[in-house]
Length: 262
Ligand SMILES: [Fe+2]
Ligand SMILES: [Fe+2]
Image 1 (tube, helix red, strand yellow):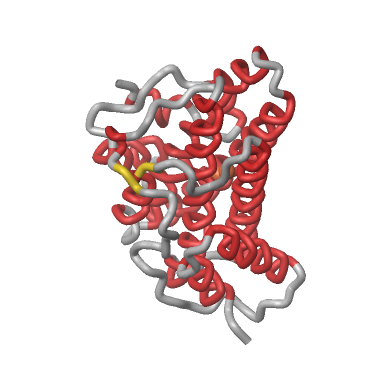
Image 2: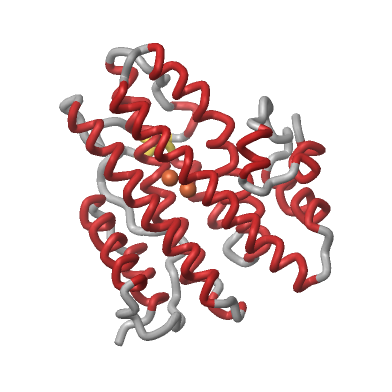
């Protein structure tokens, strides 16, 4: 029987978006139903397979996004692209660190994250289709996988940089976006963003939970470790304003990220 790690790599190696989402949802369901024998081990690719579309551009060349007119489709597309990468990030952390002797809870948590990211992606694709668009219709930016590559050698760094910094950033940026959708009376868009925001709090919390375990194993103070691992990736510091309340709810204390504010 194929292991969780092997099936995670199959998702990573699947390029067509609908197919990736289908395999991702099926794997999460199989894991939860107890149909997968064990965690196993596998060799995740340094870069996941990517479809021909969207066209990938450097961040500086991206069109501007906003909530009105075609701006709405580009905004939803940018969010869909983040979620598409987030699907792979969740399966990557599952497949990449199997040598670390992590408890089953670790895998249950990241399978939940993968399942959520898959739903987020599909919800956003649904909104794009309502506008007569689809994922792949606009260019998307290349920067999202970089952090995964740079932290592929180090679970402690992966947790600090990806869930506890990039995903935490979404807690800062989502509320103003939701406010704009509220003003535009976009009920469907608002419902999807609220769902994503609530889930992302749990993802940051999952990152913080396993970061605590890894820090305890090596006997390192968590705030000091967070700053040591995150600052090289953000030479200009972390961009305020921070959603302190959302971050606190996710178990990410200001003592970790506050000293890194730009
Ligand atoms: Fe998400
Ligand atoms: Fe997430």
